Length: 102
Image (tube, rainbow, N blue to C red):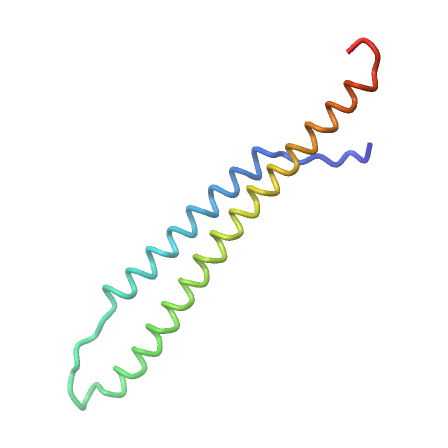
């Protein structure tokens, strides 16, 4: 044996934390879209408004991307955990079949 061991429950717990973080990023995106707005402000604030729109677009895109990455990564961690669990089960069944008296 190589000594390599995977804690399936730990992988699934990390996947849950990633899902929670993905949800938080989605909420941050919604907050940015709904709360961080400026009024027209007229000519005096036109330059500020343009920069503000750029910042808003960057924040919205960033939070959306982060949410998608975290959610997708969480799904892959669950698949990995399930795969290791099935490998461990198959190895245990093989050992049971090899050793007499089991």
